[in-house]
Every structure is written in structure tokens, then in C-alpha cells.
Image (cartoon, rainbow, N blue to C red; front, side):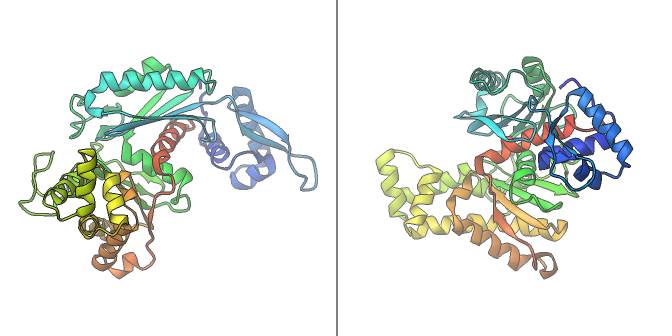
Length: 394
């Protein structure tokens, strides 16, 4: 995408077309605060740049026929969601509809060079399948704090070797297009805002419970990242004084009790001393335990597995309750790998939040599961880069 957005009116038009699809000039005139003649000038300028195209004659509303306008069907955005144990890559059109999607297991601890090589190979595979002749921009999510203006991970606890790595610059050079890098929870929040349960709200929290635990904070429609990019790092809020040692070096953090690794640790302990017959049988059969094993054991009514989930939900709800009291969101969305544990987890979180937070903050507060699942991150990554490219500031 070489064309520049000249002003805020053009930006508003592009974002409207991205989120609502093809629109008539008449409808655009009703939502953009411009006279008909000035609106026509801005649309004509966008047509000249190739960012938008005419899309047939609109349904008659009386008077002169109006043409529909849509974003160029040639625009292509890349979304990359690098998790602790997997990576998802998508190519979308300008309306952020997914045209091609690849997902693979991948250990982020292999380091930035190995991970980037794999990601670039996946991008090449999608392009070879005919999903994009070129890329207009790429958004990337990573599981750790990011210095957003530079696109550089900063001291990420579960990403050894990534501190200070110029990820935005490296991928930009390899892909030949603009790149933005953000924390994975922030891009998942953007995904829910774009195409998930949070489409209708401007102030919400997205809590990811996976290998790590983090929170995307959306205030007045914008992601709040904090001064150094570490806003929402709730996995390292203490829930147990002098508790388990956390990977961050502190004791008693939420993540040390209910991150993915902590849950597997405790599930193994339940299996080893026969407190959970279901988990013990699965450990004996496979030699290891996964989050899916815990979910299956709980679904089978295994009391120890159910209590393990309830305790994790209680501690997570304890932290979320503090956030709700402080931020007063319109919605809390729960996502990430551990949501596969089912209704028991959600019910436990809800119970704790509703019990602990003031009634004024929770009286009409929905606490819901993500609708997008594994595509939240890649959808949000494409929204991140399209927001940037369709901005007059860019």
C-alpha cells in the first residue's frame, strides 16, 4: 500500500468501508460530516489513489443514482500471532476477511531467528497458494511486553533470547511492507473488538488465560499499552503471599498458580498421589498430561480436576475483580487456551468477580468467553496494521 491517507476525513471513510463493507455515496454522506461536494472530492481522491473502487450502482433512494464504494479488492493484510507454543498466520482482504490461514505448533523459546524463519516459510506457503501477490502491511502479536513504537520485545519472561530483538525491522525487511508488533493480548482484544463479542462496546477487558495470563485494556475504543508497553501484565499480580516461585522471579503470582504450566504441574501432582483417578489413568496411558486431559477429567466429573479448575478460576476472578473495581468496563472477555476447561472455569471467575466487586460496577457487567477462539489474535493483528495504514497520521 503505497498511497497515503491525506486527512482524517479519508481515514474515517476507509475505516467505515473496512468495518461495514461496500457503502453508497449517499450512506457515506449521512455518516461523514462533510457537504456533498466535499465528500465527493475526498472520495474521488481515494479513487485516484486506488485505495477504493466503485462497486456498482446503489439501490435507488430517489434523485440521481448513487454508486457504491468499497475498498480495493487488491489490498492484502498479513496477521501473525506468535504464542508460547504455537503460531497462526493469516492473509486477509481489506475488509479483514480471512482468505488463508495456517497454524502450527512452535516453541517461542527456540528464539527469534528460528521462529521468524518458520513464520516467513508459512507466509510464503500462503502466498504460493494464491492468497496474495503482494502484502500491503503486517501485524504481529508476541507473548510478552513490547516497546510499541519500535516493535521490540522488552524483557519477556517466557521468551528467552527475544529481549531487544528488532522484530518489526527484521520482518519489515523480509516482507517488504509496513509491520507493527504488539503484545499478543492487545491484538486479541483488537480481534474481539473487530469481529467478536466486544463489537458493540468501547470500554472492555480481554483476559487471556494460557501459558501466560495477560489483559488487554480497551478504553474509549483504543488499546491502552502504558508507558513501556507492560500495561495489563496481570499474570504477575500476587495472589498468594510467599507462594510459589514465578518465572518472573517473584513469589505468589497468579501465573505461578494458574498459567498453563502451573495447571499441568498441579494436575501431575493429583495424578501421582491418586487423588484424581481420571488424571492418574491418563498419565499412566500417555506418560504425560495436557490441558485437554484436565478438561476431559473435569467433564467426566472427576472431583479433584474440577476443584483444580475452580481454584484457578477463583484466583483469576480475584485479580479481575480488582480490575473491574478500578476500570469499570462494559464487558470482560475471557480467551486463551485454558478456556477449553469449560463452564466450570467461567462460572468460578464470574462468582468471584460478582462477589468481590462493588454492585455498581457489576450490576450489568457481562463476563463472557471469546467468540473467535484461535483467530482472535490474527484478526486483531490485521486490524492493528490496517488501523495504522488507514490513519491520516501514517
